[in-house]
Length: 346
Image (cartoon, rainbow, N blue to C red; front, side):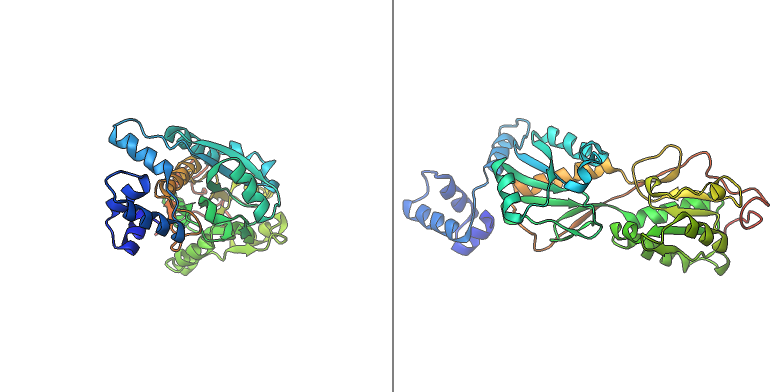
């Protein structure tokens, strides 16, 4: 409930309602009582943070929210040092700029009431939900008490406002840069979990790209379950499809295939769709630091607008990735690649 909505219900001006809530003397006592009763009935809570920001804006002083925020990290991922990632650092640095305090909080498998109580006891008003351990996960909390925003697509429910890397732009850019560097047959090798983290965008985009290529340049993707994603099966697929380059999720999930990448039975270049910049490998920098800063901006906007709970119309803010090349990204020499010769892409 906002002041504008409350004013509309009471058939009063927004200024009158705002002045009544703030207790200004120019508002008649009967009007003030009417407004306060309606505010209590409709669940309106006066936003002290927004009031403080507006006062600073009017006085031309630097704007600071002075809010306590939480970056929630699932218990299973806490040992990975999620608080040290570029995503967290981007959000933390932006929080400092706005004058907010933000803590990385490990979230054990508490029930909603227990977790809500812990957050309220710490004075938390805004929540950033980091990547969940499962690609289609869920987090229980009383969302009506907090402003909230999630990173990526791993938290399937509830549907909050999100900030995510632009996976469609990323895979299109990776494919374009591979072709620009002379690779014609470009494959895709993904685990089901990895593709789910892109909301299925990587596989969908790849199929769309393939339909626009000549049949001789199309490569059947390797999309399998986690159990089937083994070096032996990937090697077999590469030898069957004979790609020049292969798009993978990220370098941490790349199986060890020395006989493929070291030239033993062929010559294939790995290209990565996700993760932070890796200087030794070509691929997409998903700009996690920028994503983190945008998460904080989205959260601050909700706090200033006194918005809490699960949104009626969830939005997704996409951050475009950047291409990072490396020395080994060059087309195979004639006779060396799996296809026997290098052919110019058209």
